[in-house]
Length: 279
Image (cartoon, rainbow, N blue to C red; front, side, top):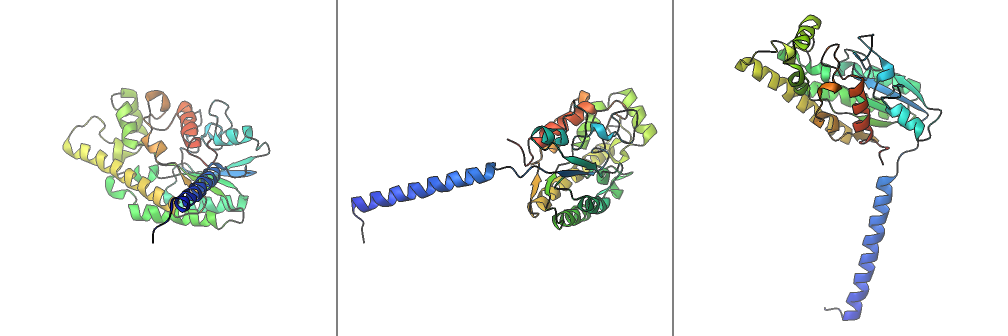
């Protein structure tokens, strides 16, 4: 049966009102930031420990992008305090050299600390091994990270979780491969040999090896996005770190591979803008 003009007009007005109300409600919900935390924790590896940014080569936590206190870095910790979390306490549970297999122990530590906000940056060491053959399989990596997120989700503190992507490791190589100092450091320190061995070689085998390492990192990042999507209160950075085009100033001149203090500040900025508290 047909509807007269007055009836059709009434339906149209009602429908528009419902759509508008729904849109306003959705926008309001999407823009609402979580309550500011009282305790936070950083999980991960040497990147979150800010290794190679000061005289202590293995770690320099004050310069870290997540829980650091150095003013120029403007870490998540600093930003949250500025936003009103003036009593915020931060724990850096990251371990230099850590692989994804060690992440669950770090997560358990954050649970015991009562962390209400947890940042996670892991995966570089799973790809930075002696050879391509010894890199962590992607399925294993995914299972390791999923286990850690499950541990965090079971915490009574119900933490907000921020999961960072892994930087483009091949780009780190490309930036400094022409530097004699960088090649010397890579050789002496035996850094990420799966990527950095024979740095001047253009042989097909070496080119393919480097591409294979970066391909594995890309697989890891896909896995990170998937496990975060399956975890309540987890925010993935959307590939912000993976897609960032680092420049020389962002890379430490101690090992020519880790982020410098400037690079840590960049990491803080791009991850904060992808976080739960981004405006």
